[in-house]
Length: 87
Image (tube, one colour):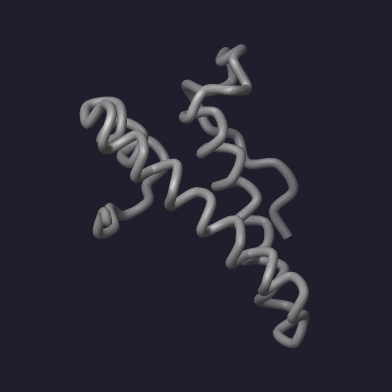
């Protein structure tokens, strides 16, 4: 299981309220929960928590894409997550 995932470029970020910081934290949680669910397939509470975090991250990413497309593209590339369809 992945405990702490180090993402370069975000370690010196001091504003925990920024969209980028929140998306990075959600991405870390998603990766931890995904590795947990590979071992414990029937942990339905963790599956529900993962779905909620995925939804929160998706809403934040769509907000960022609408507000500042350059920051959005930079974040997507740094986190190595694919671009999804924006509502």
